Image (cartoon, rainbow, N blue to C red; front, side, top):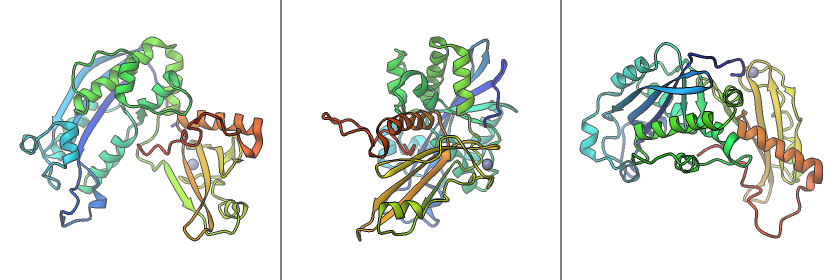
Length: 336
Ligand SMILES: [Zn+2]
C-alpha cells in the first residue's frame, strides 16, 4: 500500500493472537490443512498517533473457546502456560472477532510482530464461513524495528527488541495481551529514539493490504545446466502476479552464484522482491525456484546489499571469508 499516508489522529491497533494446533496422529473429520491453527486468544492495544508519538488508548483481551482443536497441543501448552480447562473459559470465535472489530473501530491500521497473525486470522475467518476480508492495512512492526535497530536483512524476536530498548518485563511472553503490549511499546520506543518523520516513512513503506496474497512462487522444469535452469524461469518476474500489469524494473535481475535477485515495481501494487535460486534435485538435474513477494523493508535492504556485492565482485560474489559468516542465510524467506 504505497499510497497510504499516516497522519495525526490515525488509530494503530497492535494485536497478537495465540492459536492451538492439530495433534499428530489424531483423526479429524475435516481437512486440517484448511485450519493449521485455531485461535484461542486475541490481545490488542489501541494507539493514537499524534505529533510524532503514539499514545495508548485502551487494551483488549479475549479468550476463545476452540471448536475444532479442543485439546491443547503440548507445544502450545508449554509456550502459553494454558491448560485444557482454561480453554473452556473462552467465548466463541465469532463473538470474540466481533468484539475485536468493535475495539478496532471503523478505521485503523492493524499492527503486529511478523506477518503470521493476519494470515492466521484470515484462515480462521474463512474456515468458520465468515467474511475473511480484513479491510484494513497491516503494519509489521518487526520490519520497522529492523530498519532502525538491526543489521540489514536481520529479523529478531519480540523479546530481543524488548531487551534492545530496555523495556521492563512485567508480564510473561507468549500471552496475546502481553505480547501485544510489548510490541506496542517497541513501536513507541522506535518513535522516541528516532526522527518521527523517518519512522513514519518506514511505516508507510511497510504497510501492506493483508487481503491480497503477497507471496508467489514458481518452480521451473528440470535442466542440464544452471544457465538453462534460469532460462526456464525467464518470464517469472515480468508481470505483477497480483494484477498482471507489466513491471517497471527497479534493479533488473542480477545473479550471484546460483541465485538471482531483483526489485520490480507495479504501478498499482508497489515494489516486489524477486529471488530465483537454482538447486539440484535427487537425480542430479538442476531446476530454478522463484519467489516473488510484495517487498518489505528487509527485502529492500537485502537487494541493496546484494547489488553492492554484485557491483564489486560480479557473479562470483564476495570471496568466501576465512571466518564463517552467515552470508547465504541472511536472506530469510520470511516464513518465521
Ligand atoms: Zn499489480
